[in-house]
Each structure stands twice: as C-alpha cells, then as structure tokens.
Length: 131
Image 1 (tube, rainbow, N blue to C red):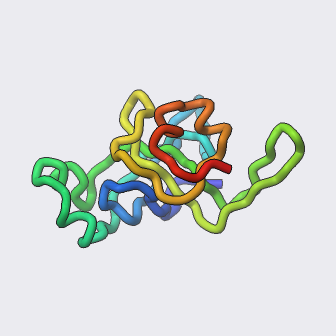
Image 2: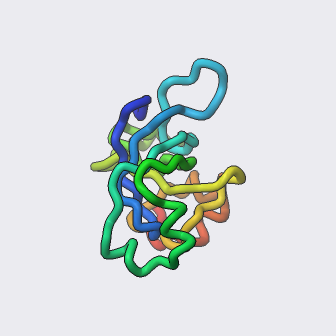
C-alpha cells in the first residue's frame, strides 16, 4: 500500500534511484495505490554513475525535485492473483512513465507481474523477468 509521503525505489534505466509519492492518480478520493496504479512522484535521489552516462537534455529532465508520473510494479503488500496465489515483493518499486503509461526508459530491472505486461504491452517489451 503506497500513500502520500511513501519513499519508493525506481527500477529503470533513467538514473533516478529514490522518489517520494506526492499524489495517487485515480478516482475521486483514492488515497492508497497498489500494484498497477499510477502515482505522481518527486525525485529525491539520483544515482551518479548512471546519471553521468545520460545526455545533457535528459539530465535536466531528471534533476532532484522534478515531478513525474510513476507506475507501481512491485509492492510489499500481498498481491492476489485470480487462481488464489499471493505474491509479495521485498520492496516498493516504480517505473517512470509518461501520460500514455509508456515507460520513459528502455530497460526495467527486476521482475514484473504478468498481469501488468498484459495490461500495458509496452511494459512487457522492456522487461526480462516476468512472474
């Protein structure tokens, strides 16, 4: 369960490592996000090794304090599948996306649920591990 003020890991190739949730995007008065929801985040920490390799115009886009949309792909809370199997991850992770829910980067690190890859095929194209 991710709510306003939660600190999340970013598991893509953008160079951003930590973000903070500002708002849960969804229906009226939705306060808690789970796997598959879109949230509004602010950049809190940048990974300098990955950030050095990026081009200058992309570096300005991901500076500390900038606001982006993020798709929650892993959560510490149990996720229930249709066949009554529960899945739990060790961390809360997101992928930075644009308004059309297409990932900004071209690589996702770590596993992604098959249900998310079916819902957004562009997410399934750039991941290696699907559970």
